[in-house]
Image 1 (spheres, rainbow, N blue to C red):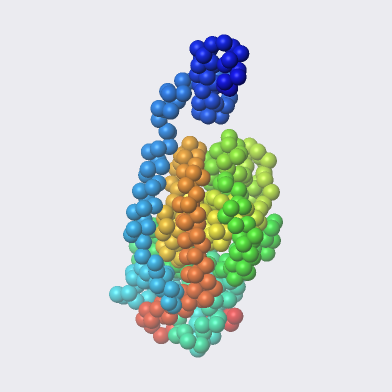
Image 2 (cartoon, rainbow, N blue to C red; image 1 turned 180 degrees about the horizontal axis):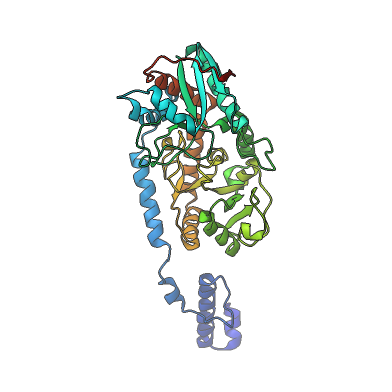
Length: 411
């Protein structure tokens, strides 16, 4: 209020009253974004400032999780795919004392595709349930033949592991790409690192070719640095399970916070299969890099997209910890990604996303560590190295002279 105006009013008292009113209006506008609708009760600014922050407890928990995880974290050894060596040791441990017998192989044959290495040549049963998947496996095995001993091996190319810890009375050596702690399958790097990955409209011949995706997604990320990414969570995928529903429902309620929509899968018949909305279009892995927060959910087993998301330099939210691939244990929760419980509500997901929206430095730090871990320790040569170590150590466990099965064909 200017002195000239006070003089015209001929009273300092009225000037003070008007000044107090103006101060109250400014304070209230700051506390309520400048809006007080007639149909809403106008809250006292003092009372509003004393309201409890509904996210404070969760936020403190997130701080502690990140701090303690970083304090305990020891980077892995990058030499000769040693980041993943403990997985290999754990998977082969059940066979270490007794070795692998011919009877074990006979039992295993019902669970997968039978291969033999004989005289540095590779043989396979004629019928392969998934030819592209078998081809993806053979791509990694064939270059190793000059150094491999003779062996029988049974490779499961289905999505689901086969040898349950409690249902299988006898030890049975079956190779599977993914499993939970309930299974004793021996994990191998999935065929999808080369070919035979999931086929969708954008990738009609299958995901495959990890070497190419490393380049194309990293190039896309370079064009969309952190500062330019949309500060919202993103997910595209079919409704493989209802574990994904909470995020999709949150997206429908708060589209400015989350963009999560269901796409079609092969079983789609009506909008009921996409939670009562029309299916969304598929989005390329490169376009995922437009967003700061990327959600990963398991599929039928482990999710093939998990490794790709890190290449965007975005923060990966990984839902559930039950399903594993050989490289998962090298990724540490709160260090390389944000772990999310399988059973969660839209409100819980909202609190988690908002925490990282409001703590950009923490989000970016985890995103960069996740990228570095995948980029430096999951190269194609690391995949090849793991196959090499796995088959050589497995071959040493064979306890019988391997004889060629005449029903198999050379590949």
